[in-house]
Image 1 (cartoon, helix red, strand yellow):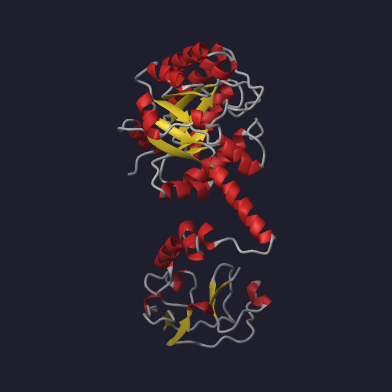
Image 2 (image 1 turned 180 degrees about the vertical axis):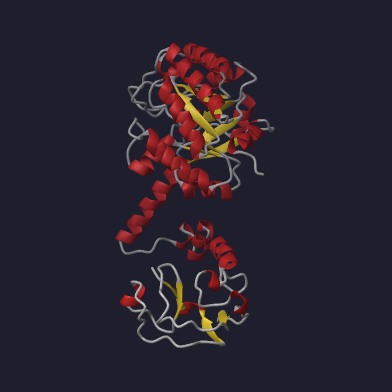
Length: 379
């Protein structure tokens, strides 16, 4: 039996090195991340708000929408997915419901932050955080929800208090989050490498995660090996896939609008698209269920007109069924809905409604080979 997503994520946390995770926003972006070889991915609230709603990550997207989108993502891949639980969508009781919902959606982990409502993305203006007590209580509620459910979902505790209060305040909160049972610590919007090092020194037994946002400037973007040296275990890229997708779509739309075909090197072929989407896998699996005559359900179990012992398989491409039983006069037999009738032409309305009189008249077919299409189920 395969490991649960949470157990797989915990295995990654216990393995050597730093681990990169792209921010996905739908099933396709998550599948592409898995195909590229990533061991986990992150359902970015920033990207999901942008793609699902076309709106900024400023508290518009709801718990229900995140759970629904998350379920689509987790069902599309086999790698663990960390979900963005924002601020839990309310008080401690809402946090418990959020954690339960994310568990049912198949998430391996959940990020919970200490922002006040409405929550905002890390760079948004006007961000506020709740009190220390409420922030810690959210994490305690999340841990309780995990324990009560019997799940092992990974709880990522995030603070935005560095930006709104001070570095010291953020470190105090993160220590308290670890004491409350958080599995991973996340200090958002640190201003320098020195601050990042100070963060990674606290609670050395608890893994640390960092996000890298392209476009903020070189000073805030570090390579994975640099982040590992600082002390981070996970690095996530919330807007990378969203950003390149926006740029690619804008370029293609301009080409199409101006009467040009998007350059071939900028898009995969149709065959490649179909392979990515799983058409090949679908067709291979479909062959398992193609009717071949072998193992067919005996028609006698659905219609008394045939003797099941007289039915035999036919290996020919036409996949015919041999009916050698005695023919029962369908004109004198009642026709019940859900039964199968043998006929060479479509049944008329009266026959479909259960009338005995079939038109045209059925003929006896003793010993004849009939294609399966001649068996009609009366609805």
